[in-house]
Image 1 (cartoon, one colour):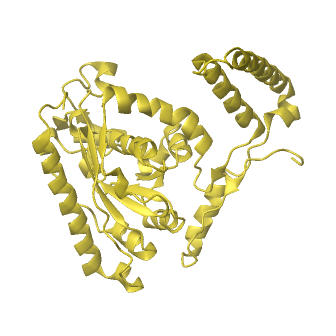
Image 2 (cartoon, helix red, strand yellow):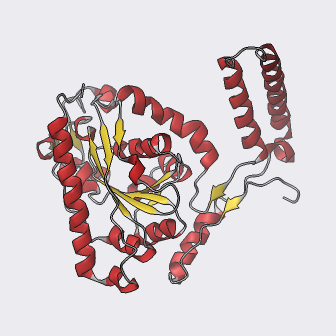
Image 3 (tube, one colour):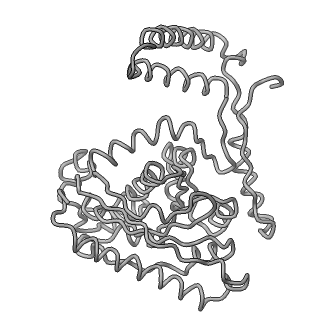
Length: 356
């Protein structure tokens, strides 16, 4: 509708060598996230918008009053800060004053909703300790490659929080996730808005070409669905598609080792028949699931460690290296071996699964 405020769309620089189908898929993604009209100017929702505007004005009045009262205090009033944050969040969502890139990443929603929820798990439940985060570049592309475990992909989410909160530049980590995630209602949309996309070579290349910090978990379902007796034994890393994407863009590869994720859902068995009936890659049986019902979904509070290794430089390779299977397999093995050895070191230094 003419005259409506719109959210700005941040274009990513797609690689010109990609085929027509890739360009069409990018266009389809961006079409669904381009328009964010202001609720205040939408005639079809004018009554509710006026009510919401009244709420915002009331919050602003409280914010101004609280700010005036605490102006002489050395420490800002916590309640006033919360009211101000709520007011600002509502204002931006109503007016469309936020940006969404062509992958669907809504940074405003991610910082206001998703990250605060994940920080509770990160700081209080898993008590994650992070090391080596300085090995990630402060700007420009890099590909983080990590081990994958734990039945549900909490390891990816905790790595996202680790980079956002512990890195000097507080960068956003874009995860490459399985197709199943984006096929699920609500969860798929939330994953897009949190900045994540499908684990395919095309999307990995486009993110890296745009200078994004990207993460991949090459073990995939083989890592997530492995049994507890095989914990911290890396599974096959696939065909090295992630290495090809890094070679094409010259992005460094940063190995990442995660300890603690294997114990949140100790998987004792996999009911394959039930998994096929439900269309799932596996159906886990843990000490609490499914016997304990909904309580079995609560992850155990294991102590986590996330360590980022030294980056592996790929800028010295020529353009043909990405299509050379010998080079890609060699780099894949190098990354895998680095992660495995770091896992062994972290486990050797860990005294207790739940207390560190």
